[in-house]
Length: 106
Image (cartoon, rainbow, N blue to C red; front, side, top):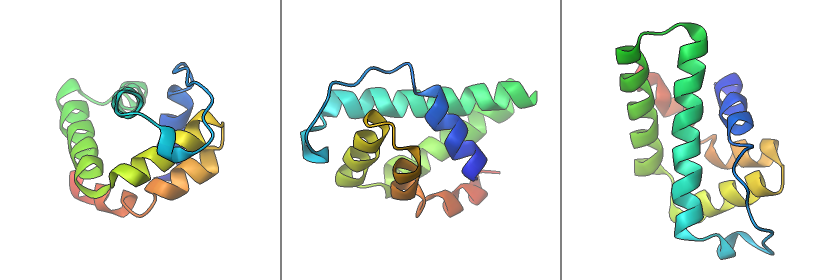
């Protein structure tokens, strides 16, 4: 799971985030872009592994639903804030409580 999380974080690097003083300043638009980036990273990882498009769609859709259903807005803001500060360990720590639930997506 940590490899997936790191891959997702690395694939989000093209997103440009304005400097913010706190996680509370992260906007809904930034969160939407961040979530799209996570999903794109998931899909790219599946393609690199050679998974079928149907498997990628099902797995990544499930992962994103799991995240959206279990991560609070404040946690999303914290994860994005750490992402924007290039702090991947802290970013993934925010989301780590949810990652065991990804097992149900397999």
